[in-house]
Length: 118
Image (tube, rainbow, N blue to C red):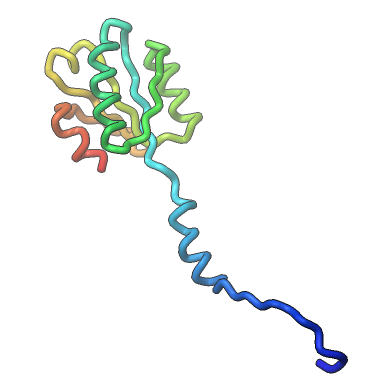
């Protein structure tokens, strides 16, 4: 460009390649809320909570014991799915998986819950 020689250092990171790598970091985590209908189901809920966390599924554990408030809280957090534990679920060794975006739910045995979420 003219003028006297000036020492310097150059570096190129490849902006497009960096942006392609960053796309994965912007994806929303599939976080789930675990809702217990009563304190009586806490032990059963903790078994499911530990199972989910061992499989690297991020879980929000709700201690409200009020379904309406817990679902409202899950919506405010922007969660797509919740797991509901009530008396029937404990008796059947299952849980209810509710999809908040599609407003659908189904009962799943705890043996199959990980397959359903991954």
